[in-house]
Amino acid sequence: GIQVEQSPPDLILQEGANSTLRCNFSDSVNNLQWFHQNPWGQLINLFYIPSGTKQNGRLSATTVATERYSLLYISSSQTTDSGVYFCAVETSGSRLTFGEGTQLTVNP
Amino acid sequence: NAGVTQTPKFQVLKTGQSMTLQCAQDMNHNSMYWYRQDPGMGLRLIYYSASEGTTDKGEVPNGYNVSRLNKREFSLRLESAAPSQTSVYFCASSRTGGVKSYGYTFGSGTRLTVV
Image (tube, rainbow over all chains, first blue to last red; front, side, top):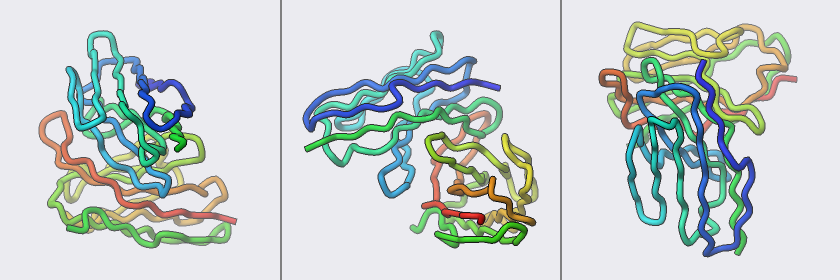
């Protein structure tokens, strides 16, 4: 099956810093999503981004489908950005294959 | 809107016991899913239902059964719980059109411990 690799596995930032999270996938996909899992375990969809660039406030994402990677940018990080960020890809149907996540800690 | 509601939130079982995790969505989504999340890992698909009346195996279906009771409800049953099934279980739903899904929404999870 398709492989999804995320990097870095862990990231510690000071409040106000910028960061880039990467997701590599091994085959062509129908769709790609970024999720944030907060410290209470709730999963929230951030972006649907099979290709191109999208922005939502301090977050933006870019997917280069031809090169099989996606990037999530977080600018001016806040403590509420802490948690785990997952990349998930859709291949057949609407089933998601998740990467192992990037654990982000933002210190005040 | 409540979104996706899972019950219970926490459960402790003894090895060999059975239980059913309940999930309901109020967004009129056609597709529903059960995932499990183990420590330090991403979510893995157990079973899914593309529409009412259909169910299919995901990546890790062994030891589980599911029922799509109607469009709103999708339950997951453990017939004989094993310690390897200790995990956090997430139900999700989405609207599926063509080859893509939209509005993927997760429940808040069920933390299951099998002793």
